[in-house]
Amino acid sequence: MNRLSNEDALQLARLLCRKIALDVDAGDRSSIKAIVPILSEFPLLEVVWPALTEIGIERATKYNLDIDPDLNELITKLNSAIPQNRNE
Image (tube, rainbow, N blue to C red):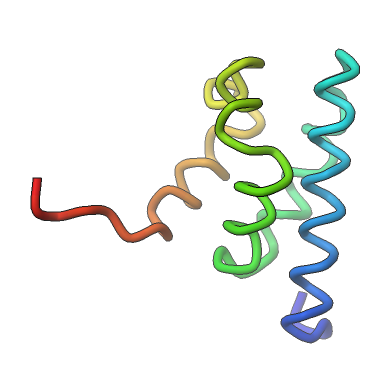
């Protein structure tokens, strides 16, 4: 993804995450396997916001996307990119 500007990469990540969201809502999980390797090539910070806004935590929980084998590694990487509250 080095050839894309940050804005273009963010927009493309948003579109890919939206595709996953729409397909999962329609009962089709096949795009996950095709799209996750593409998203894995993006800088993590370019994927965090689109994943949260387009797929969302509610959808991820509803459809058990957090335990999907194709998404698990990407979710783990995204989680590590989000600052955690260390005061707990």
